[in-house]
Image (cartoon, rainbow, N blue to C red; front, top):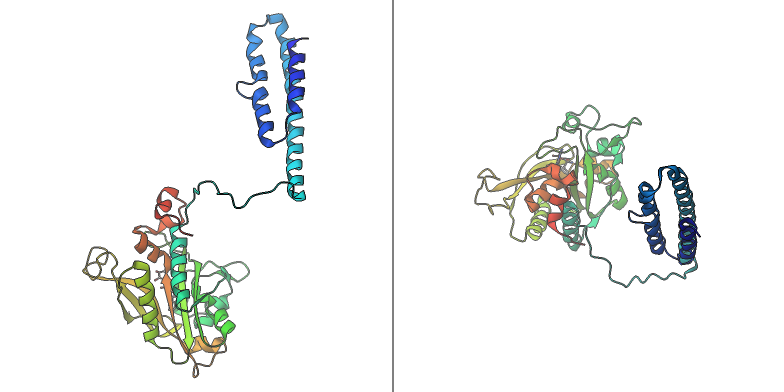
Length: 342
Ligand code: FA5
């Protein structure tokens, strides 16, 4: 028997033992791998007399084709067998076994979002969802920003061909949430927002906001201050004070800009807060009566307050990252430093 027939026989014997993807791969490597039997035969060509080389080469190629065809046939069979076992329940997966070491890490934004949601939920808030593709009405008109209102220019919008848009602010969910509860509510609604902005250290075209609303009888600015202060003190694990300055947004009246004690110097004054001891935190205010009316809520009966946190900026404060662009960068070296929490 020549070495080709021997090789073919031994391959046909070994094929019988293949019963898993692993044994199939071992067989492939034994014959076609870098140091496999077929590869070794090819290396032998140079030792063969010149006039016999062509025939020798043809034989190797023929047996190589045969092996490759058989291996691909087996691959299909092994996969089908595995699926059949899974379906019949013959293959039991023990879900109580420990998993492999966990290599990934949650995004710092996800970690902080979970922490903030936990704090607000513990204060009786619900967490609501918002859409990323929104109607012009929800994003603007319903929150008291009608067509031609100059405030629309403050948010350079990505418009879609169908007249809808990528939401520029989480406030786009206000109308839907107000209608859902049609009265008292305490809700937060985190979400991705989009604006056609020039990018720099603190501006992204795709960023996150975390918005909150409280509606009830006799809601006042004191409620707003209380909930924000509690949330921040919990997140930064120290007492954080907040202060309000006047601010304008068409959907709140009165409107404010809320500042918080600088988390880097605890209010003493440092380069980050430009010596003031305060960091600009978020716009907020008492919900404008028109916003309530647009959602079918009687402003004589109920009042409300709302805030719209620039969530990425809070993540930067918490992590010490000094450039917002890291957050969407997918740079695992940077993003994985902040640990896993789930
Ligand atoms: C608003 O979007 C209002 N909807 C917030 C609001 C809600 C006010 C409820 C009152 C009541 P503004 O455009 O200022 O407001 O954005 C809010 C925050 O989002 C900003 O303070 C900032 O932290 C963040 N932000 C805005 N644009 C960007 C951007 N391009 N990149 C990163 N963060 C941004």
